[in-house]
Length: 128
Image (tube, rainbow, N blue to C red; front, side, top):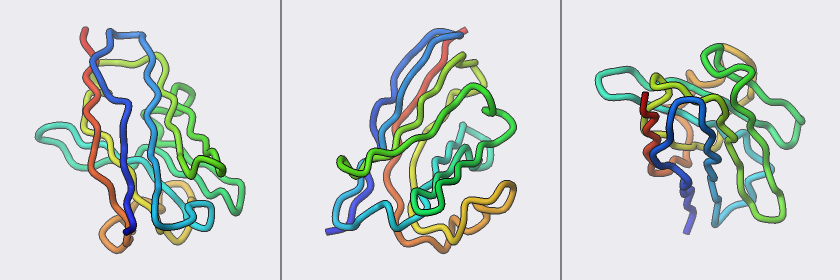
């Protein structure tokens, strides 16, 4: 059974940090491009970051560049999103998906509707 499970969300104050995890089961994630998304109430889904273990590439949205860091642990079949210097505007439901054709800036997230593996989200709330 193929699954992606995001976890690690919670309530944090402005300026704080959180690390989200995206655990993959049923497939070997290092053969796929995996991306993190977020969606705040009343707003469109935003591609936050992606990682291609195979190509060794990562990409970040301008809104999180310099504050967030994506990484992967092949042994644990898990992708992490380290979030630092959090702001209230980072408040959203964060989820992960796998199977993007690439991890190139400004275009990778456009394939969201066509990827096969999508996980449920974890809520991040940043208080002011």
